[in-house]
Image (tube, rainbow, N blue to C red; front, side):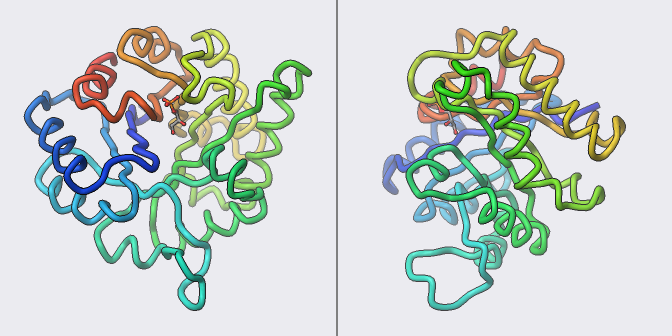
Length: 250
Ligand SMILES: O=C[C@H](O)COP(=O)(O)O
């Protein structure tokens, strides 16, 4: 049985007061949903506040990024050790916004993955194609290359700390969702690619989340697909009612 996960990526949204509001609303409206793990990923400034506030709640807190180095002259950066020191044990790496806007390469991401795992953190590793890749039918090759370059140097034992998030870039924040069939097709491909390298048994245990305009009204049909193990939610995670409706869509 694979983990079912719904993770909210708050991106660069919410100051401290807004974070307090959102955390309060999540708690007030919370309904236990057995078998579904819930994660929220606030910006760095609110990470400790969120972690502390959710300490006694079944909601995990993740970082949206981290630096691959241990410490030193890297102005503006945050290390894995700093994250774990405040209790944060999960990090999103390779989000398409980091890849596209901040030019994070597969090679850099492989180093970040290593740094996270060395610190016993869990990684939510994002992959996904641009619209032009899909139009030219390069989407499978591209996602395969992202997996190979970012993760396939890992040993099998590291994979219990890896979650994959498939996010087609053309569906992020656009209101255009991949159809449940498109999501299933790519998720099955990702699992097959992992099985090709590490074997069926390991691949069958890896949680693969879908991200890209998931909303309360489309979550259920996406989550119903065999290889979709949850979602990485952007915009809809900023409203407690919408986010919890997505959690309850399982
Ligand atoms: O990390 C989350 C994804 O980028 C999806 O964002 P979205 O739900 O706003 O499309």
